[in-house]
Length: 83
Length: 406
Image (cartoon, rainbow over all chains, first blue to last red; front, top):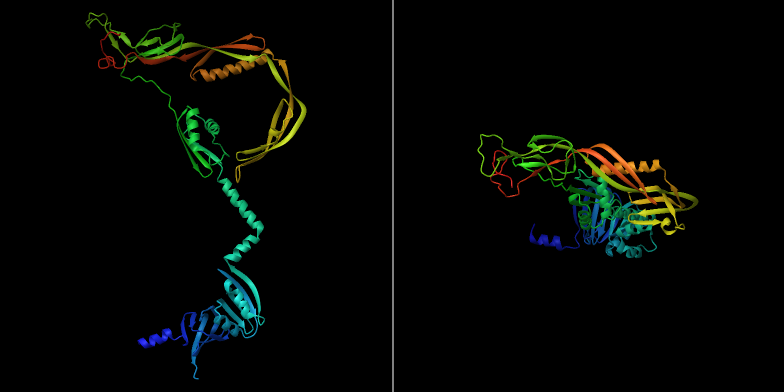
């Protein structure tokens, strides 16, 4: 990863960012939540959206633009605003 | 940390969660089972802000409270549990504050009972406070109890372990290679002398005083093959040994009352109770004694050591009248015999054989003088060195030595 890319990754507070592993997913820069169900969670992150599909999804922590999701995560989708 | 578990009901759950996110209201363990309700844990400090966010659009039900604050509130609200816990703690505290058992080690001649009695007088007994001054008890034991040479007291919780060392009796011994006499240690009439070494210097029925030589360790050399010095006859010194049996006479005087004091109950009684907790005692009989002469009778109902050293007893103080009655001869003799047995036990050695016992009564005005005469057969011989310490020590050793005694 180039230095510029790293800076964009670290300081881009409007970019959708997710770290997922095992039964946990950590979504950063969350501005709002659009859909919250046990099968689908969609979070708005400024310049884009992150959508998680799975089963038994629950939010373990909701605090300071961070959402920690627990459950079986099957699909992660990222959508960008084209406008 | 303080959390409230809530169940929120209303439309657009995600909108509420977004607003919580925006206003920095921390939520944990959010579960959304359907579109119209969700469960979550809200931090105590964010609670008021959360309620502002929800407003009238959502119905919020607190299902549970978690954390130290609700836990303490919960504990404090259960008064009986709290009282029970406090009682339990008090009992544990009190239990560790009293001596519940005393174990004595190291005694041989003394009995455990004697030692425990002496310890009680010194201030250490079952039920006494654990803060008893051990050093003081030990000093008092050393001072009052001559039979012990060392005492160690160790407290292990409610158990007091007392270890003692008995004082050995001082025995003056004569070495086997040292010449000595056998002397009488008591006055008496010689009955039998068994001289294993040395020469018998008394005959049967001779009266001997204390210190008289009974078996002599100084033997005159009669063999003429030895030349005699100018100083007179020659002697050889031996380690005299043997047994000397003599009839000894013991004379004891004791007194008895000629009248017996008879106690009769008048029938008047005052019932009462006694409650003892550790060192503290409450006794109604000690407070109310309406009679000049009375007898105290008690029956223990409760005697606990654990969890508390508590005693509960009912008692009765009965009024008495005293009247004097003349004692009959049979009774006096019986008592005199008991006194004689007691004196024999205390003053005569166990090996002594009682040959004769005589009782003489001399009645006085209110008192009877009882003279007890005991004739016993006992061993009265004891080895005694006739060498003054240091004198001729190099020359005099048991065997063939020719020095005239001083």
